Length: 502
Image (tube, helix red, strand yellow):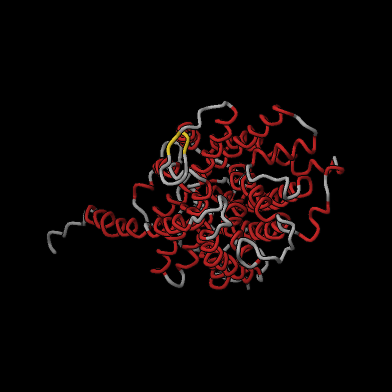
């Protein structure tokens, strides 16, 4: 006899289904495009020894996409992507704990993704200021100088990006398609360009996966043992590389999630593995570690000059344009994707009712407005190294409950409908991946934040603790919903009057 069909009990996000796998994929490219920032940093900091770490973490990101493909197809009504799938998993065994799992996971995911908006607009402003020779004068809020033009461009850019986000998923997908094609086509071509000019590539640059100073792969670095440093840099890598999972945020708005989930997530994961591994490998093959630069524009221009010959100002402009478009695409997803996570958490009852509101285009407009406001505040941090450290306190942590939840659903609810189903043994892979991410988070994070290996060569531990504080701020928001809003809501519901004869 066929096993009884099991059904999960969960609340849907209620957003209209107006896109398909392409919309989810192309907006999700906002995560994959982060390769433009992380590849130069890794190559400059670690040299060829960065390649094994990059390949390893990228493959875990592809695995994460596979897990999310199964989960999103199982729960097609949920919106907000990865964090929304932990709640139903924990609810079966520990309903009281599940509420906090849901709230913590969504809030941690929000902390991980929303700073991408201000960070990318800051980086985009650097290229705009450079190309148009604008004034670099500014002020120093803590120890990071911020040019006035950087502030203006970043703030105005975030406000303008709210417009396509506000106009709904269909317009947003169209806007993201244009940005995605303008950025990812040239980026993909650059990843494989050296194949057509093999004389510029030097395989010896990869030999032995040596560090940037030409020492061996297992040599101490930045005053720490090799393993400690590689785990520390994995903390930085996970903020970028596993962001290909962003496509899952929009599966709940796909017309045919049974089909669209597996296509969008598999395609996103596969393309992510391709682009995240080929770009840094290409930099090493053509430029080597010493010829590289941590500035994305500089390293891409140098790379293009080596492969195609000196293109002068034309190549410089084209590279700057590609990077600006890529950064804008990623900032757009930071506004839209995390808004859906906040919306779903509010629908589930762990966040203020303010975030449940949808506009006439069927998108959580108040959640997106909230994102833009806090993004503008984060612009005043001023530097990538501060924002990286602050943000990843949330991002990596958000996947631990999701991966454990995948295991729980496989163990406790084996008969739930699964339009896309991975092999049974993958539930143990999910647990192993959760343990691996936990080591990176709890050990690698503090090491990266506290030592001089961080991007700017300065201690950013204070921003790590600011991230911890932001993560804990979920609790007062949860209590406000439960103790104030829900109480008022119950009191406002009229009770039935007793009958005359009672």
